[in-house]
Every structure is written in C-alpha cells, then in structure tokens.
Amino acid sequence: MGKKIIKTDKATLPVGPYNQAVSIGDLVYTAGQIPLDKQGNMVPGGIKEQTKQVIDNLNAVLTAAGSSLEKVVKATVFLKDLNDFAGMNEVYSQYFKSETAPARSTLQVARIPKDSLVEIEVVAYI
Image 1 (cartoon, rainbow, N blue to C red):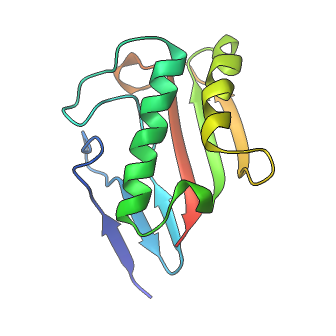
Image 2: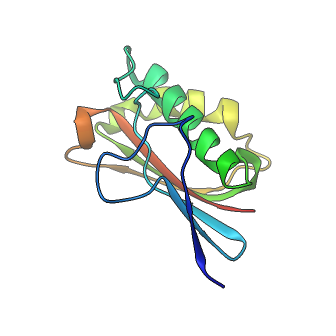
C-alpha cells in the first residue's frame, strides 16, 4: 500500500514543499487550507467569508482524491482569534450537519500563513 499524492488546480496550489493531500489505503489527509482563491489571492471579508473559501478548497481537494466532505472523519480548525468561533461555526455547520459531523478540534494559534483568520485540515475516507 503506497501513498498517492493528490493535486488539483480547483484549489489553492501549495506555496511550499508540501502537497494538497496525501492518500494511503482508504484514507486521505489534507494539508491545512487557508482562504486563498485558485489564483492565490486572499478572499476579502471576515471569518465567515474566509471559512467558506477554506471549506470550498477542502471540498475540491477531497473530490480530487475520490472523497468528499461527507466522508470527513476528523477536522482540525485553527483560528487566529477564538472570538471568531461563532462565525466560523455558523459557516462550518452549513457544510457539516451535527448528525453526521466529523470529530473536531478547534484551537487558537498565534499566527496562520498569509495572516488569514482560519485554517482547516481534515482526514477523510475514500
């Protein structure tokens, strides 16, 4: 069972020596996604707009891997400010319904690449 590198131009391309996702066996591990559009530009707006872009990026990467948001089993959310939790959670809950939502950790961190407000990484099955 070897690892497979996942790449798609439907999400932000990596800005360093990493890949958008790696799958091994029936699991796919995404890199943390930040709110950059496909051209690499930060989306305008606040936490809600940024969270939407991050989840859209994750969806594109998961689709390229043969998975989907519905197959996410673990999510890790990094917030610049935990005061943004409610806004992030409002958007997040539009994609992940409580009955089937993945396990999740949410952390406040000192800084996120490109000074974004949110970064999310997930693990899903294929």
